[in-house]
Image (cartoon, rainbow, N blue to C red; front, side, top):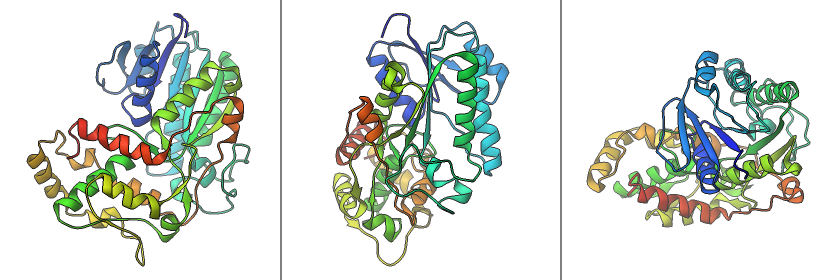
Length: 355
């Protein structure tokens, strides 16, 4: 990138945001990282703190920063979809309004496959498109905060004169602590607890997920696609699915993940066995594991998001995406999911978050 390029990463302490910081700083960008609280120091990265729900806080934090590219990866889970729309659509609107005078050239927005599946409260209900999902499918006839975020993005782009891209990721595998949707670390923590109790790592999900085809998104690939779209004309004003590029069945992947984590595997039996039920008494066990292995995070709620992994693996529908659009446009990066899990577990071990 030229010396005049300056990226803003919104939600910089999350899984996707952290991967973007690594990618951008590694490529020599000037980067401003925005979050409620500063994260770890990185070369070339300046942290700014703001409340994304406060227009005044955003305006103060970003005043005078000559930003050219924006990568928006933040979201805030609310109790109802109406609240999700108000809060998450509002965060996109207010963030871009705070940048009305900045020389912004492109805004990349991370969303997800609930674009095709519907929101949590209407998940998988009604008429859905066939798998694999394609980007040109019409919106579902249901309220969805992803649609609200897109609409705010489109309106600001027309008003302020920048190009945009939307990145619809599936389950994102990557490094973060305290994240509400972290399947990789959640499975690793469940495996450590299972091994400590001398029991197998039991698949928590449905028969459909155990036997059906699926895909996931490596956070590094997501970051690469967002940066590609923001710097190539083929990525301008387009929505892209964002997944590793391979497909797998959990009945094949689960025993391999368990082997990586040093525990026996047990698959689907007759009904789902959610982690929230399996791990109801897990907090004191995790405390023992942390003490025994000298780990750095004793609060199990910061390393395990049982509800999210249960929701993902408990689905009674097949979920996978078509990646042809971005490949034909020139983005050809591909990750093997088996390797994505293995690399992620090694990174968490090195950080002393899992044994």
